[in-house]
Length: 207
Image (cartoon, rainbow, N blue to C red):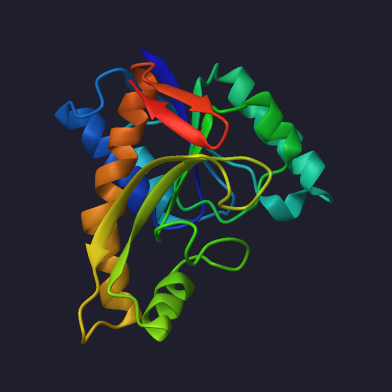
């Protein structure tokens, strides 16, 4: 049973998807041992509380540098003996210390089909606004390993989601979450927990 640490910054809908997947048996080989928020008072912490999951707040603004913040995250995750870190709506960009300490053991879910609409500045509704402005017919979600490039790590899973003519950013965001993010994030976690992911350069091979 692998120990999972979840990083959050907001409402925690992706956290809830992972919790639900564990409780329904979609994720069989993993257990959430800590939820860490970069902000006080976010609803994600209430979700953790309701499911009796230990949580902590490590605010980014409390640290002068990204390196110091990274060090605090590494210390926390090591103290909890975490095997896999999941960035589930985590809005702080992590640095080299955390990435190197957990090489190919940090995954992120992003609300687009990478490499479209990704990188610094592309988060939340901004992603869906840009997709609609561009006129794409397919949106989607991507789960990838985290490296030093924002949204640039090797891709684990992707799922396309239809864009409809009368979509607003809010409507498209909801559909991408429900049909994309909440489906492939638990799948990717279970694949990792089963030891079925192997990174070869930019490719992730699934056995």
